[in-house]
Image 1 (cartoon, helix red, strand yellow):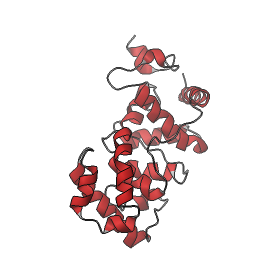
Image 2 (cartoon, rainbow, N blue to C red; image 1 turned 45 degrees about the vertical axis):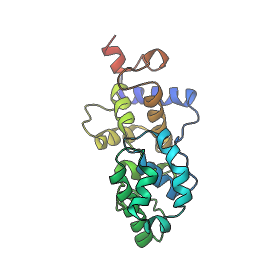
Image 3 (cartoon, rainbow, N blue to C red; image 1 turned 30 degrees about the horizontal axis):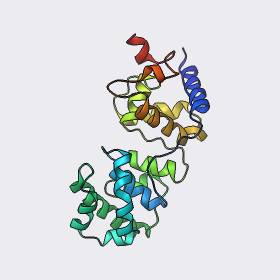
Length: 212
């Protein structure tokens, strides 16, 4: 099967079966999503959504977060993974956001990465979700699903996977494709025990066909 045909089959499947695909993180402003995505690193969206309501009551703006004491931030996020590092990064992010960007979250991936705690994956999420830019964040789910479906070939890093995916996915679908792959990996194509019986892509899935 040609790689173009493989991608088209995947796109057709998700277009039909997952017409609505969006982040499960709860937010109301770009600043809130930025906080939530930083918290979500190696942590579930469900846990982040439990943490953020109280967090945003305490720190509704970047200006207030930039002035926060470390202990105050830490106490609010201590139930997520790596709360020490994330508390430092959140305060650092807010400080740079206020000082360098006048409190306005930039829409450029490179500019976003100038803030502490914002790597390429986080920057791509913000650019894609908030600004609908053709940026595709590759987390563990996307990395795994792309490899199993044969959409990425011998990719060793998230960046390699990202480059292969954006090469073959139409630009206007890239923001949605990010969520297609994440949600498929989160609920169907699980890491340890994928639910292949619930998947409509087994006919093209290299992982499934190699392990029958």
